[in-house]
Image 1: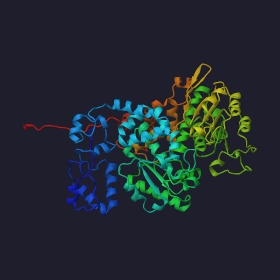
Image 2 (image 1 turned 180 degrees about the vertical axis):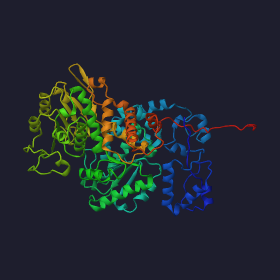
Image 3 (image 1 turned 90 degrees about the horizontal axis):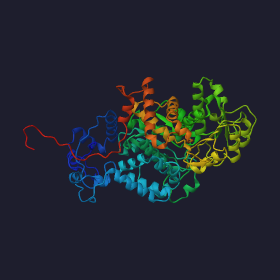
Length: 625
């Protein structure tokens, strides 16, 4: 068991240093501390040179030399700190040492017994949103127990903590808000973003997930209610990838909302005005990124999440080579979808470049998938032009064509527009071009109709149908529809989970093309290797690794992804390949280069094992104990 090492300061030392600021309410929390002169000066500067102190702490955290003092952590406050609280798992000796004996029931449970109890409590709730709220409360009380529960039961817990339940949680975020987990930075804070980052209690941040709340899943503009997305995403960073939760920071950039229902709701927790756009919006993004680097260092990963199309593409293009950043809606979705297609090729016995792809949707996800598919096809030896010819896209106005009379061809869409007649009907387009792969990413539920699916089955022995839109209500078709209308021949995957389908004496287990197969591993690999930029090549590597982890047994059951229960190992393997790629291409800044990359990755992963609070005791020769 690891032993707790805490950083802190006591009231007496503060008084001796001349500090006259607000009381820090530390009585009963720290029983001993040896202050260095440097640490005393640090706290003395609270009312003065705050930024210099914060910057120094960041640099020390980055280099691993930040002053730490090992001491006892006493009293009821240890039970109130989720990082250290073990609840009824504190041993009798720990309870007596830390001054919490009598504050807990006399029984001592193991963590395994605690997991069984909280799992039963989760299952006691009928509604997923109630389960979501319960799990958030557990995270607030006992962090390691929360992550142990989630990691051990990831297939059951992931749909509660993220899609599809997180969509409902975001819609009702004002009702269920209990305790702040990240930072709310508003357009009114321009010029002070760094100050707000300094208010966050953790100094060693390695991963930031940020949203402006304009395109939350397929639900549209939810403004500040979108905080549920970065919070949920970072929970998966830890549970699935092993990135320590103390190194994660969720952020909402609140620039207002164009959602009239929220603007008039008494429960809305964000700014009550229309979205600010243009230069002020861009200034906030720029200041935020600069502040993150100033506060936490150049190698801090910043993931853009659920930005609207018009901002997502341009921000990625603008900052991809300036910061360690990626957009999961574009690149993560692309990577997991391409992994599923690569795995499906083992069923159809074809190459990527031998297929024709029909996309329903031409937004962030669809264009990201199409671009990565082109990269993968080019590796098979075809030219970019030949790869592009394989891809057909349909948006709300019909087939993407050059000079389309209905318009709506943006710069991003133009690269996939065909010199072809205008066709508005998805079913007509399907019959016309006869695709072998249909990928839905438009957020319009049910658009892969019975006729559409039957047509796919009529000109393909094994039609590949991916209904990737989230949440479940917006999926282009259900797993049952895909299997039933193709007599069980469809190779199906979805963005949200579907139950197994029994058909013709066979049980099919639909693959879930969850971005969580990708972003935790990519994030972990980039962080531990110390790379400065996340490249598209890394996402193609992740796609290949993920597809390679799909077994023949998985394929026989209808899966094009490994079981979600193996996702922690999937993330480890992805991260290992990212680290290898970074060192092979002189992109890694972590030195010396580790000989065993996989062991190196595992050493950086978070452990849900409880820490011991019993101090290490040793004797001196010749001294009576």
